[in-house]
Length: 446
Image (tube, rainbow, N blue to C red; front, side, top):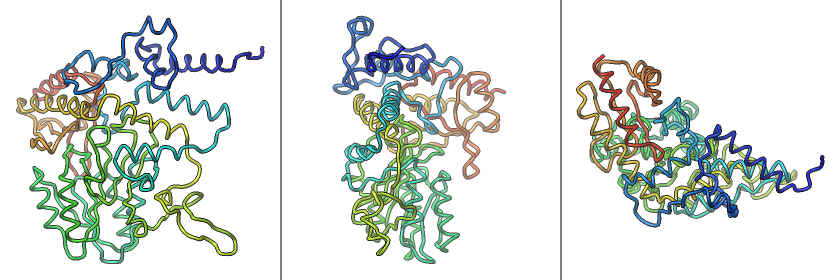
């Protein structure tokens, strides 16, 4: 039978999708929130079923159970009875809000044959991190952004790059690859126990041959926030560039690249921004475009080409670093991350994240078998906490914890740390933190 109302057909399919998406656990509050977010008018029945949507019009107490319970309801992962998820630093599960935008746009593409349109995300990214739209390249993950700089920055044999001893593979391998190919030198600065010691260690590693400092804004290993602004100031006094691996901070605390004054900032949408997997963006300071040669290129990278003259030149913006067909749905999903974060308020998110992590950290201090790796200094930590169990290998504890308590965390093998990392976010609760501490205390007695 022919569909007489295509709009109704799409609406029904959307509803079926949402039921599948949530495994039948769609809350009364989730559907109206999504509809409101995308300008759809809720039906009278939906209005009657749904409680009022909390609005973060100002500061929200990290312990406001009503507000944060409502936020928690928006995440399908919290309906999964087989897991308590504390590994947001690896993958941030998306709320219904963001999944809905991705699904809606993907359906639109396949229903109408829409092509392109993803470029609109540049303006949203620029607004979120405070830069010019022309300084934004769209990527698919942090590593891609880092590689654009690591492989494209004009360096010569013997030039030095400084990294730290707490790097993710995504910021180590690209620089070691460049070193192998072009004989640049990678030097490693050890992190300190606080910001001042870390800054001092980096300064001691600098030589007259140092050309760029490429370090994490926040480490993936123990959650240490580096003194990024001070590192940039130190480097710029010596005419050295700075690239920040920003995998974690966006969506956890405010990132303002103008205030940081960094030269490059690479991040992704799939961690604390809670966005679609396969999205990311790179900030490149405009005056440095000509110092970073585009290596991978295609349609959109150029300012024109023909068969007689070849390539006329590069795109006048950071679009020179991204090219070809991209997913409209993915980048609309990325844009919806900013709406979601801004709706709650980045300062509210920071306070909630830090409150959860601080409760966990204070609990760890009371467990004799625990060695805390995260700095205790207030400004050097937020939502990631690293530690070791003195009586149990990290991988054994990780498996035991999942089997016995259904809590998923991450083991840290990087750099031979053999430690554990907890990353909580806005969908987690203080009760879940208490349960994790109980598990660690029990493991400490084994």
